[in-house]
Structure formats: C-alpha cells, structure tokens
Image (tube, rainbow, N blue to C red; front, side):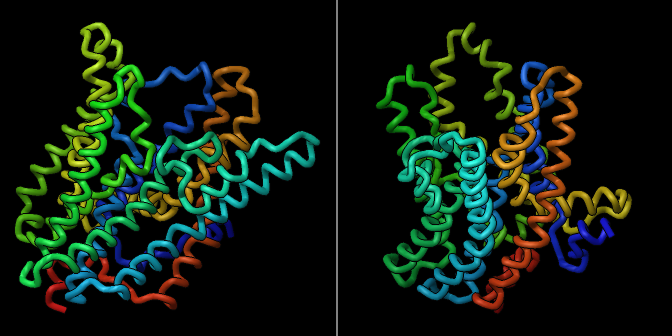
Length: 411
C-alpha cells in the first residue's frame, strides 16, 4: 500500500537521464545545505562541501537549457514569433510553477495566522504591502528578499527570466531585418541579456564602495536576469550546431573542463578560503569579483556539463535499477522539495525541537530529510502533477527535449 502511495508511475515517460542527474544533484545540494541548520553549533562541515557547486545556480543553468530549448524549437517550428507562441509559452510555464508556489505560500500565511490566533500573540508575517509582493514575484525585484519565505528569491528570478527572455526575442524578431536568420536573432537575444545584465552589475560594482560588500546581487532580480541565459546559450548550440553538440569527443572534453571549473569556482568562492584572501590583502578584489564576473563564470562552467549530460539518455544497465529510480524520483519531486524544505519543514517543524546535543541534532537532520522526501512526493503526486497535466488541455504541446537536435527545423 505504501509503495503504491509513493510510487510516481512515470516509468513509461521518456526522459533524459543525465538531466535528471543534474536536477537531482542540484536539489540535494540545496537541501543538504539547509539540513545543516538543524545541527546548530554542532555542525563541523566537511571539506568536500567547499567543492560542491551552488545548487541554485545549477538549477538556473539547467532551467535555461530546458526552457530555452523549448522556446527555440517552438520558434523554429512555427517559423515566426507571435502573440500565440508567447501566450502558449507563458501558459505552460506558469501552469508548471505557479499552482505549487501559491499553494505553499498561502499555506504558510494561513499557518502563521493560525499559530498566532492559538497563542494569542501577533503574527510574524511581513507587512501587507510586503506580503503582497510575494504574489507577483516582486519580493526581491530590486532589493534583497525579506526574512519570510526567503528561498523564493531564486524562483522570482526564474519567473522574471521567463518574461524577459521571450519578450526580448519577440522584440528582436520584430525589429531585425527580414533577411536575418532566426539563429542570429536567437543568439542576439541571449547575448543582449547576458551583456546588459553584466554591464549593470559592473557599473554598480564600480559606483558603490567595496565596503558595502557583495550587495546581495545573487538574490536580486534586476541583477540576475542573465541567470538562466547560460543554459539558453547551451540550448542554442544544441539546436544550431548538432554535429558539434553530439560529438563524443566534445562531450567528454566539455564534461572534464566543466567539472574542473565548477569545482574551482565553488572552492575559490567558499568560506574556507576567505581568510586567505584577507591575509593576502586581496579581499577587496574578491568582493569585486563576486559582484561581477563570478556569475558568468559559474554559469558558463556549469553549462559545459550539458553536452555530456544531455547525451546520457538512459541509466546504464550496469548500474543498480534502484539507484536509477531514486535519481528519477528526486528529479521529479525537486520543485516540491525546493518549496517545502526550508520554511515549511525546517523552520516551522524541525527547528521547533531544541538542539540539546549533537545526537539530537543528527536526529533532527534525519527527521528533516524524511519529512522533505515524503511530503514532497505527496505534493508532487496529488497536486503538482495533476495540475501540470491540466495544462495540456489548455495549451499547445511544445517540442520536447527528447527530440533530436534539428528536428524542429524539419517540421
């Protein structure tokens, strides 16, 4: 009975296993970072943590590759960019992300109000004007996100990227000369977003004193509109240069370089090495780097992983089937895990248990992981997937990532 309850029943659905691995790795890195909150002062860390990529940045790159690929293939298949394509794109994106988000957001608000009513104390929700911003993804549009539901900073960046990317593509399609090929318009769109966002960060990095730190750029929409664009750039290469993309030598080399650069980027930006920057007198240069070039370096290094991972279509038969199923399962419930793990589970449930010893801390960690996996599976199976399936009745299906590169040009 329990097996049926938690089974997702999607074994018949064609998937790209390598991309599932990336998605599962990204969410596990994020949840692992939040799990350490339960240990309090007993958390000792591990050197291997400093070599792990930023899970959220990995999500951005993967999302850009998938969403950018869908947009490019839809553009090529239709041969033009018009209002119908734009509205269909937004309909499908928002059916995928908004229902789950609003369910958890409204649940958190209701839970906070109920707890305040039962205790007789005033609620701890932000002011109404601030709370309203969460419903239109303005909570961190131009400044860092408030303490309430803080993990949604990255979702706001993604949602605004889903708005700006197709709008810029539509604008350039309309304004550029008729003889311009679509591939040039796509590349111009991606480069325009990347260069303009990097220019914005660079100008502010020069204008604002270093003493004010990194400026919280990582979590502010206006300074991160390029976040998914490095993945979109990879989708561009897959669509228009399939021979290069599918080359085994290219995939192996880009994987090796991508892994090395990703680990190097993570390590050089880690807390572990900060004291050495201070001792060497280069801390100010490090802050400038984190304001500016860190973001494209991190994005491009992770994008290098995509040719190989996209070519990893199925789990190797030599690997245990259980391991492969676990990866696919985590990948499928990753969005629900993202929404549930920190504020709903860690802050509102697990952290209400005092960490009186290291043993208690580890018990809390285990409880945290168990609750996240169980609740996320249930949320995905009984709400997220049914709502996502509903969009097929209200929108036109888009070309899938499993289609060979270049197929859309033949349709």
